[in-house]
Amino acid sequence: MPYEVLAGVLIAEENLWNLIKAIRAAEKEHFGDYLRNLRTAEVKAKELLKKKIFRFADQQIDINKEDLPALANLFLRKGIESHQKGLPTSGATAREMTAYGRSVKYFIDAVLDIAAAFNVQIFASVVNIETIRTDKGILQKDMVYLFERYFYCLESQEDHKRGLVIFDEIEKSRAQRLIQQMASYFLGTRNGQFRSSRIIPEPFFVHSELTTGIFLADLAAYIIGWGWRKDKMTKPAREELKPYALKLHQMQFKGSKPLENKTGIRNLYGITYIDNLKGREKTEDQ
Image: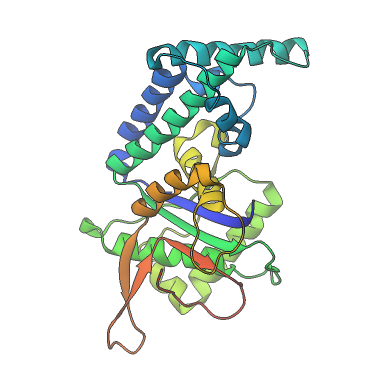
């Protein structure tokens, strides 16, 4: 990816199950079955949105929209069968490839629209890929920025709601290091202690292939890394992902925080570009 992206989604507890059901229904609508039943590997944004999928979709082949799910389903089932038999290709036809590409595009649009309908809010720290990470003993600025915006989003909620932190499962030593860094931040810094009043600072780790929320965060990270750009960001973007990035931009958290001198407020936005990870925590208008 041209930029490193740490992304998260905020899903209210009361919306979570209905959101999951709606996204699962969209899978069946566009692919004729749940994607977990139609793939040999975990469903990842980098696979769903790779460039060749858009080349499939753009082939000049006439297919009625109501025929797309069955053809896309056949394309995926042929892929499973060829994988099981160790064949080099699946034998899918151009018509099936095109149907799959178009079904993916419709599905991603549907997922983002469903997320917006359930008031999912987007957070992301976008970092220059050339930035050097140095001190692994402390929580890095991109994570701190994410927690800052998460905190003020929770502060804006009614009923004094508190937020959990749920990560994609990672290798055990990395998970232990992250837990230690979070503990140092939330227990050992003034801002961290303040923000622990809203954020429960001990994270949970889950299997991403089983978790819709992690899929949404992965989707957001990939689309933002390739399709979201601000003035300072000069790395190339993929034009076909910009419409999805615009939807995420509109779903990002928008709020404010008091200035340190108490003379006003500073605007906060869920998606933030960080050109380097040095220096103390601060905020920038986006």
